[in-house]
Image 1: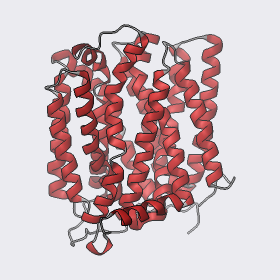
Image 2: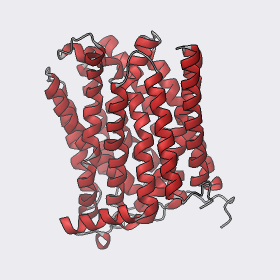
Image 3: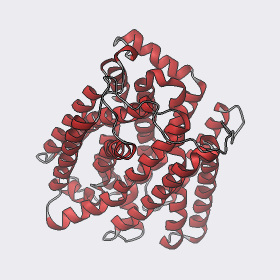
Image 4: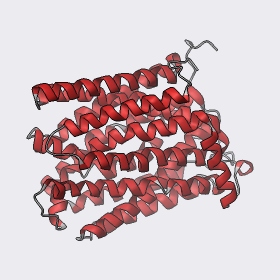
Length: 422
């Protein structure tokens, strides 16, 4: 089929493993977006409350190092979300998608309820870590189900639609968190997480069929898991885009972790933080929607490679403007929003490129990719976040450096050939 001809975003399978019909496309898009939003909601809804939570659990230091510790409330969850996917992957390839999904959702709800009762910093970090562990199971199953049903540009198109809807959550989550704080204490934020997780549990239980046929399941043992992960590492395309994603998404996590401090301390926008954050997220949502409409015509590589180069150039430009003229929301916000939008043109495409060669071990491939884009990315984000010093320069310089490294990785992966129509 010519590269310019659009490919209908139709599933490869229209029924589940046991003959149960797959829900319609839009229902599947919203369902998968909801499952992925568990993660975004668990992070973004509490950003306006980090200061209150830190004070409530005894983080009373006034130095930048003490203030930066509140970022760990976010990063402990993200760290829990990352590495356990390496375990969830083989489990879902052995037992199917539904069982691990339900275990993950139940655990997510229980940990949210437990967070309400905690008043000690390290205990809260531990429970947040476990909430991330359970959320990682739901996220992995969501991506694995998509790979079970779609492939190639169809998967990229579907995931872009998912990300377009999914991005509504980070757009409105801080505002929801702020509204909760106006009428109730911060503990109610975790109650909202529990309600959201419970609703998804009921919905998927009733509507989502098993998508992994029994004959396609892999044995659950260390040897089989090792062989599957070695297949991921040995595949040049999968491993390359997995590494590039792990690096570039470190920039995203560095902003999420320090965003509340930046808008509060640098730009004095504490009361309107949720709106500025929503504006940045809106740019990302628009980019995801554009990708969903154009990726089947233009191609995953052309769009993502161009976005990666633009991301790097905009980061360098913003760093120079800030260094020369100083801090100002007047140029920071539009330039940063355009830079941040590039994640919408890289995320779904990098994911589809990494997953496409390994459809038979989609759970394992999704686990490896999820590990790279959460654990590796969050560790990078923590390192950049620790350099926050009351200025946006450490964040912006971090963006530029990560863009350059990611571009080098993709160049090596593609053997120096960017913008291929494949």
